[in-house]
Length: 376
Image 1 (cartoon, rainbow, N blue to C red):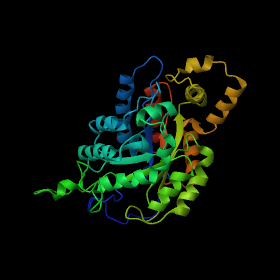
Image 2: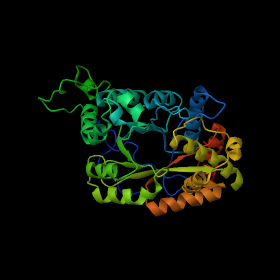
Image 3: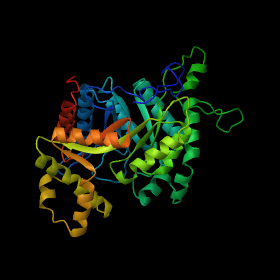
Image 4: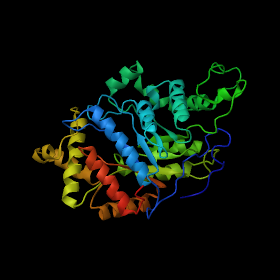
C-alpha cells in the first residue's frame, strides 16, 4: 500500500478516504475484494441470483474481503444487476462491516442529482461503508443506451462525462456557488441537512471512484486525485498502460495524497485444475454469445463441454482463458500474486464467473484459505 490519506476519514463530511485503503490480511500482498455480476445461470432465476449475491456478500465479509461491489448492466438475461443502488440497499441490510459499492454506476445513463440522492440514501443506511464507482460506458448496447437516456446522441454522454462528474460532486458536497442555477437544489440525504435548525453533519459521504478500461478515465482520475479501478478482466492488454497513465497524471487532492489503483480480475479456484477449467469455460461461452448478439443465461458446464467451438470461437476462448486466473488454490494465489506484482495494483477485486453461486462461493473460500484469511 502506498501513502496515507491527507485527511482523517469522517471528520468533516468531505470525500476523505473512508475505506479507500484497506489492510491486507493473512498473506495477501494487497487487500482482496469481490465484484459480483449477480449472474443468472441456465435453469435458475433472478430471485435465486440475488439471494446468491447476499450469501456471497455475507461470506466475503466473514472471510475478510475488503469490498463487495456490483456493476450496472442492461438488457443481458444472464446478468441481474441493472439497478446497483437497489441491490446495494438489499446487501446493506444483510451485512455489517464489509464495504459495499458500485463497480460501477454508468454516469451518462443517469441524472447526477438522482445518483447523489440514491447514494446519499445508501450512506444513511450503511454509514461509512458505501463506495460510488462511476463509469462512462453505457453498460449495454447502443439501442438500450438510447432507451435509457431517451436520446440517440450517445457520443455526447461520454464527451460530457467530466462535466457530469463535476455536477455530481457538487450535489454530493452541496457546494454549488451562489448564482449557479442549481445553488438552491440539494441532494437529500446530504450535507444540506446539517444547515437546517438542529441539523447535524453526517461524518461520511460516499467516496468517488472512477472506473475504466482505457486511458480516458485513468487520466481523469489522476488529474482529479481520485482512486481508480481498472477492468483488467476484460481489457487486460490495456492494464499496465492505463495504470502508468493514471500514476503519471496523478495530482494530490483532499481525497488522496498518492495514487490508489484497484484492478478487477477474473479468477476461479477449484480443488483440481480440470474442474476449474470446466467451470470457467461457461463464462467464455457466455461471452461469445454476448459478443455475437445472442446474450443469454450463463450456460452449465455440461452445455459448454458439449458446444462445438468453431476455429474463430476457439481462438476467442483461448484468448479469454488466458486472462482468467484459474486452477487449484495455490495456482490461483500464485497468479494473483504475479498480477499484483506486475501491475503494482494497490488492491485486487476478484470476480468469479461460473454457472452456480455455490461454485463461486467455494472459489472465494478456497482463495481466502490460500491466503490465510480468517474463517470469520
